[in-house]
Image 1 (cartoon, rainbow over the protein chains, first blue to last red):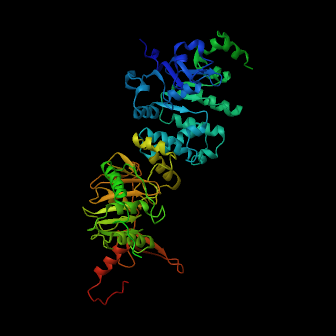
Image 2 (image 1 turned 45 degrees about the vertical axis):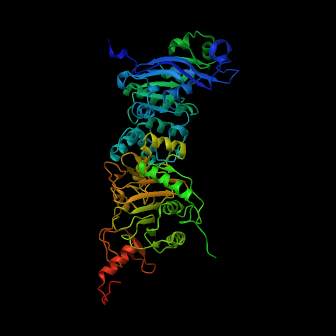
Image 3 (image 1 turned 90 degrees about the vertical axis):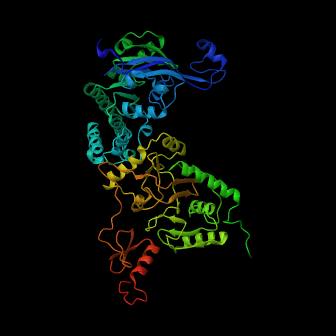
Length: 281
Length: 289
């Protein structure tokens, strides 16, 4: 069998709920929830039974309206939040035999620091705003075990150059940077330990069009040249169409449609996706 | 009016509570143990952590030495010494060898400590990761998971900004290869003295309500990078203008008129001892002074 056909990351039956749940919402889920919210106990079912595979070098797009659970899913994947239940298998970790969600906090940190990178929608979450840009990149490298200043400085320099941050601003704190530059520092940081998987959460939202274009170019370039697998979350179908090979559509915490991006955009099946595609300018 | 304080100011219950926290701190080297910091007759931030440790430990046979930035005679040191000797009736000394408990702010004495001695250090900021992570809840997690990249990131920032580790004092140390600890604002010069120290080292932060400890003969390693190793302040080719000592931690004193810098031992009792040694009995030749 071709090695190419094994997924790097498989997620099975991921559930995330906020609140304890009650008899009312746990028994006949489908009928009683208002969107993803139980009117009796107030529990929010943010992600319900989500399964997908991510293959090497592939970009998987996730679209959906705000509140559909996209970001919660991403936070669960990066262990920023605990899942309620579910399974995640990473092929490069322990031969793909361990459920990541059940590992100890130390192991989770190891996975985050060595095997994943994440770019947050809000740079405040991904960067230490008062530390230098190169220090932010070093943070990830130090977490991954590097203890050589020279190496880290060289790597930081290389990456910042790569994302077009001028050399003379390397030692400046990201708080002095524009939104687009902060986003690019975040990308550089996420890339620093050469992760096989990159999670991108609304990376271009709020950026102006020319900066958006350069960030998208960069992402595409990373996929092509470094063969990094990525999960890209966006509510912007244009971004998804440009980047993603395959896409999932989420609504109220559930995946309602998935398939090739072109297919979804050309021939949407579910009413929500149809509406979404038709509202595309 | 004669005051009727309990022995060593505290009631016995308080002393016991502090000693219990101290024992836990010794059992887990470098781990910050919370304790119920008492109101003291001096303000928080003026050595209440160290003072509470001293008061909880002191017995009738103890001899106390208190130093403040190397000086036995600064106001702070004198006041603390007075409080303890008035309420416990014990003897105080300026000689490091003679003391059984040494309370210090920002220095470890030059004279090597012996087994059986206890060094009590006053700590303003017990959390080495605080600058990196403002939340106590988060830093507790980081300690629990031995996730100390923050400490190295802060050091990396120094190197990026100033070309070298610019920690003037309080350079973080790894204790027993487990906890990263703030050694209190002692100069880097004193960090190596903590490694395999024969004396017990206790650190108390009164305002932050934490006690932690380095038991005798414990590995204490200042954190550094492979290609930027830890270095102490260098006083090469400098000697004390009073006693002529070399290889000790020195204060730089700049003459306002001439603008010239002269150096002198920071540890006053050490300096005095050296001067006494150098001087012949009933000596005449004190040109050095």
